[in-house]
Length: 92
Image 1 (cartoon, one colour):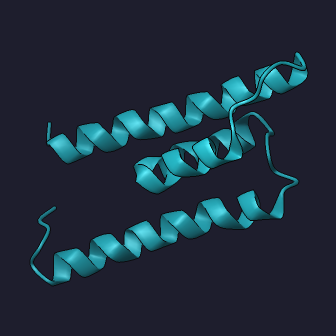
Image 2 (cartoon, helix red, strand yellow):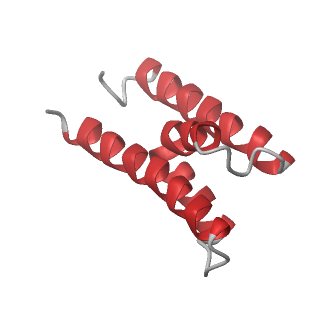
């Protein structure tokens, strides 16, 4: 498996799981995972996982900056990948 693919699979799994964990902690009124950390995982490549976790766990779906931010990060990552590919700097 390609190193980049393994990295993205791992980060998306992490993104998905931390959304679920933060939701669990919210229900238990415990210490929470920061929104900054949720966005950081998304920006680093876990945007599909965090976005999916939002809807699977019904978490952060009332916060406009998550509802708009997570898909926007994914769109920018896809656009960046396409740009790098067209420049010959990345090969799928």
